Amino acid sequence: MEYSPSEFLQKIKKAADHIGAYLDQSTKGEGPVIKQKSAEDLAASLQVEEWIRKGGIDDQHIDDFLPTFLENSMHMHHPHYIGHQVAVPHLASGIADFIHGAINNPMAIYEMGPSSSVIEQSIINWMLEKIGWFKGDRLTDFRDIPGNGGGIMTHGGSLANLTALLAARAHIAPDAWDHGNDRDLAIIGSEVAHYSILRSISIMGLGKSALIPVQTDDNEVLDVNQLARTIEDCKNQGKKIMAVVANACATSTGLYDPIDEIGSICNAENIWYHVDGAHGASALLHGDITHHMKGAEKANSLIWDTHKMLRTTTLSAAVLFRKSEEMNATFQQKGSYLFHDKEEPGFDLMPYTVECTKGPIATKLFWVLGAMGEKGLGDYVAGRYYLTEDIYHLLSQQEDFHCPYIPEANIICFLYTGGKAGNEFQLALRNLIVKRGNFYITSTEVNQVRYLRLTVINPHTAIDHIKNLIEEIRTCANQLLS
Ligand SMILES: Cc1ncc(COP(=O)(O)O)c(C=O)c1O
Image (cartoon, rainbow, N blue to C red; front, side, top):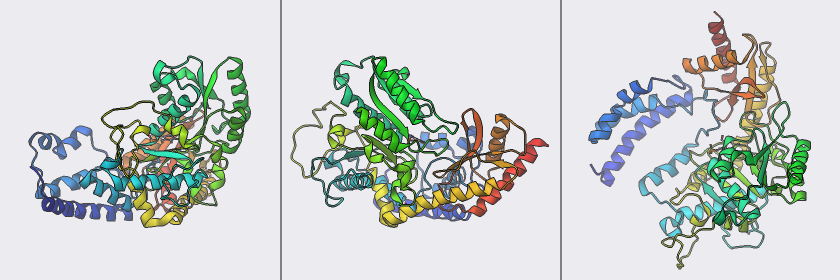
């Protein structure tokens, strides 16, 4: 059945009532944060097979379907959601999604979405400005200015990392696009680089052995002396260093690699420097925490997810380049039905992306900024960093908890020491916490030790919620020990 515009709006109003009730409850922290049924039971309750086969979802079915769907979704706005690095979205971001859901303007070519295109270019300029790579007079200055940076929004940080590494390869080995890779290309990066880096290297056909890992310290932060040594070793072995990759910040610990010092080494050696700022580049938005990103302007490329610390829904990231020419050289390919000479008053983004069809990604952040303003968003980021430090102090005061490092971002790892020693106990604790559904937290290994892990990303989480979490952990530990 086709929905007329008025039927569509009627269904939206119905759905909005359910979503409103869900958000109200979640934000107040009522009910569980997570509820896990078996996949088969859940599919049956949602009548997934029936709807796929027969169709016909009508107004009254929304009342049956949506409460079950929402009940069995992760309650991101619940203050006890302190899990992954996934934004608790500002609801303004949902307005962008709603508009896109109705009008569908994939805008990698200007004609297909002029409004979204100018918003993307302005958001890119805003991000470039924060790094110091924007030379225009105002964010809507779209001129091709000499020395200007460039960038593009991608569907997530993994694609952004791939795009940046493709640009690095185009820089050092421009023939690789046509003739394949030289066997002597090497990428140097922290041994705990995000797995999307290694995956990109394999996707590019370099083979994962092209990543030369640099030893990290006890908290898995890259050691610059080791980096210098690794660069020397690579040069002595006749390798061509395609890029050095730094974590800003590391996924598991939230600790920043020494961005500035690595940048100085790369610039002196004339090596492409890529900063993976998927999570931590947002520190650029607030003066109190921006020191973590000091030296970011020395990078050649930098990625920055908005669906982590910038309050947007998934998927949304940016890959940014110090020099726009580097971005222009990334993909050396033309599709004649798209890239023909045409006269148009805007710009096509398609030549710069892995994607052919691309969503109006930047409209999400545009709506968030439209609601909060850049200061409001910066205050939110800094506020989550401060709260994480407070959590560190709170946990450190407990006799039965241990934090291995002072957090730098809004990610914190810790051990419950009142139970059994060893990784299995921490993992069992995390699993029981999630099974009980009162809190959602994660766990990770740092230097082979398994920790409980929080990402303090939720604007509704306060220190009192963490006090309750401490009690929940103790209850779970007692249950496991009994
Ligand atoms: C440091 C880092 N880089 C890249 C990524 C991948 O980003 P995405 O999940 O947006 O693909 C992540 C995801 O957690 C990350 O933490």
